[in-house]
Length: 477
Length: 109
Image 1 (cartoon, rainbow over the protein chains, first blue to last red):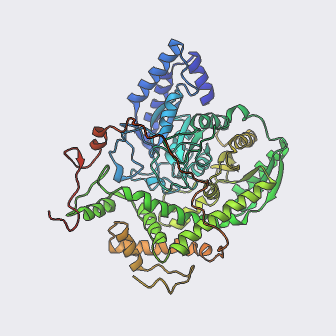
Image 2: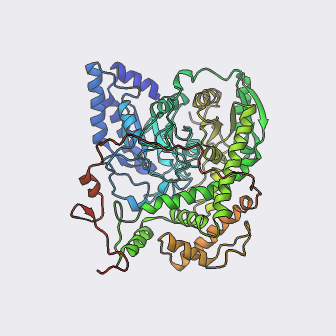
């Protein structure tokens, strides 16, 4: 399979037409999406028009952009003007946003072609894509397994070869964990580095958009297109982003790597073994690897599952049946609101909205929400201490390989445990990436996670590239 | 609703009544079997959070955000906004270029 970098070069030079590339992608989706359910919506006509525009630019000698003709899968919580955007929820079924997310516009300017919108846990709440109102997505590596979540559709689309690139959102690991379970690269940038204008909000102090790709180089290429200041997002960082693609092959010589025991020890033995092998590979490639412990990470999960639901309970108050989406009639406005939300939200969304409402309610605010925010400070300080002695941290992305469909749907706490290794970077707002690194005892993919300090994307991709270069060959490839 | 003040942090047991109360605040209508299920499930999550609730962190400031937020201002210049027709086209019910809603409680119909 080609890479986005190679494909864009071929399209830019006129050796391949964007139209031909898009037709191949659409054909692959038509052949297998029925089984996988990675895409909820395919925008074939728009994709062909976009491809023809790229081909016309090439023919006219205009620059078609760094992602010229590269098909992309968009998570269905990214607003696309005039195209369905459901967030995996009945409450937004049929909604067509009146505007594009900034990242959608960035992709268009870069010449990328949106193929469609991908399945997800409802409002990004979940770790398996089983909480979608439109049925689960299956893992392309094994149809009986989940793809992870919440961005499981985008991860599966890239893993299945429908597209070379995808976009997801990561609030507690929702890019990195499905990347690990599907055997692709998934990266969460620094909080504020990529505009969230047009990303449907889940937990606003944690949400971040980021790339999926089949290689670290492609993830860096896509990240460079996405990163930058956006006046339409008040949390967008004003500084000019450091390019990452140019330095992705600079290696790990002399870089200090902290193998974080706390993000390995609780994992299944095969996952732990791969992380240790990745650490050995980095040491062999000139990095200075030391084991470190950050015990404060242990409190991250509990803090996250108070903070994220609290923010969600506030953000999701907007689904009131008035301005967009579902309305179920009631005799007065309050009854209409209640009937709409009761019919429109699935069980996990209801759980989290209630949990968040409870954590914010009088009598519990200090014990739960304020306390969780203090834990957030604790985790952020722990990261700062760790980064006094190392440049990057290494750990597992997910505690196990992909699990069976249905295995954890009735046990929310077991499902939440999937996020234990990814949550710390959301609490701190730091960048992190999952890189495929061999397989487990069951033959399914395992992801190794690299974490870096705020705005450390360049060194993050460099280290990730070294990990990737030393990864054992995946079974079947 | 049960008495909150007697409960020490980390020793909270979520009651059925708490779930009914919170669902009402969140504008959700739960069937009896859902109340049972959600009470048990939310209790499990809160029990797990007891480790956090029990920590002595009085010396730490709460963090609401990973970065220091600043007020963002821009010049007050007119610019293009969303198309009204496009916005209203997405609404469940529209009348006279406005969102139409059922009567608000207490008002005359």
